[in-house]
Figure 1: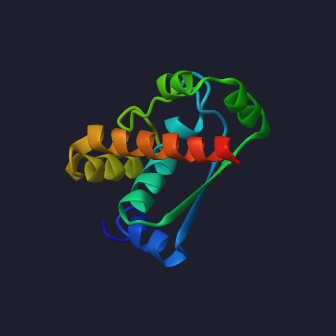
Figure 2: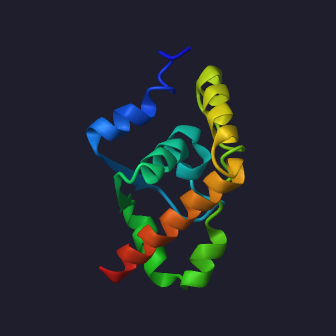
Length: 127
């Protein structure tokens, strides 16, 4: 249904004009952020619409990021949108249906989100 919250989500993000991602870890084995479907979907929607995205890392993650070689960061960052979950099953179904229709499907979403976060992590390291 159009009023289920998923379909109107892109419009909501456009009206807000900015997304702030509060990320717990960049490592796939520890990151809760990348296992949550809504957070990955939000970043993807913002990214494809050219909306500003800021990154806020938890302090432990910042310390680890500063001590980790970029190649290791790149290897440990895994985005698999089809394995991510939502608390509400209907939301999960609707979001994954939208993702299936995205350019290059789920792989395109995964690549776009991973690339974006690698850029954000690089910018954070330069500060």
